[in-house]
Structures are given as C-alpha cells and as structure tokens.
Image 1 (cartoon, rainbow, N blue to C red):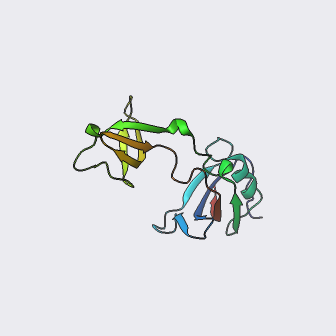
Image 2 (cartoon, helix red, strand yellow):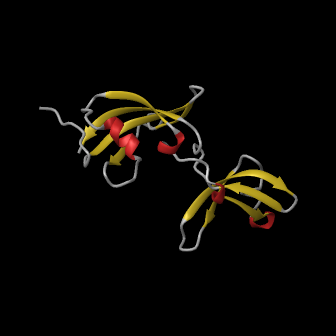
Image 3 (cartoon, rainbow, N blue to C red):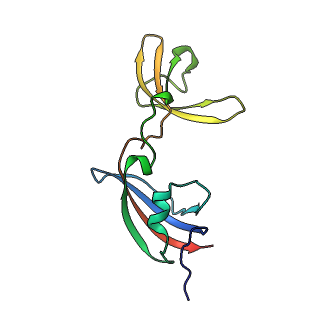
Length: 144
C-alpha cells in the first residue's frame, strides 16, 4: 500500500511557483533539489497543507492560493527607511537590489531597495511574493 500524506507527514517534493501572469517565480527543479516540508508545524499555511493532504508518492497537483494563504499580504511595517551611509560599494543602494542586513542576534534579513531619495533609502523587507496570488505545482517525491 502506498503512503498517503496526512496532517503530520514530512514530505519531500518539487515545488514550482508561478505568478498570476503565468511566469515562473521559483522552482526546486532548477537545481534538482526537492524541498522538505513538515506538515503541522506552521512552516507552511494551513491552506497549502489542505491542498496536499491525501496525495501519494509520484502524484502531482497544481493549485492557486490567495496572497494571504501564500506569502501573506504586504505589511507596511516591513518597509523601512535606511540611511544611505549603511550601504557599500559591494552592496549599493540601487533600486531593485536585494541587500541582506544583519539584525541584532546575528539574524540576516534580506530586503529589496524600492526607492532612493537623497540620503534616504526605502527598503522593503516583505517576502518578494507578498501580496500576490501564487500558483503552486507540487510533485511528491517521497513521504518520510
């Protein structure tokens, strides 16, 4: 009997994410390194979990999640203004650049430069896919 994904399963699978225009946002297939997902530990949204419960090894499913169930809505509290002096030649304050900032405790947090105005740089620390509906394609490789 083949294994079936349950609410407390750990799975290994390839995940491809597409935006509403159909363009690929990311895929584990690019580097042929499937993702390990632990259900029931709040690392993925309950809506995502509900889509994959009941799948078996080798099965593939495509589904769409609203922004709130994918990477969340854009949180204005995650947009910060940083002094331009905090940027370097290796990590310049240029619109579109993703810069990693080290937080207290050594935690690294990536942010995207959204605007540069004089010495003030607007950095968005929201997930790049926040606020967007995302289509997921998941292929179950293994159930651990």
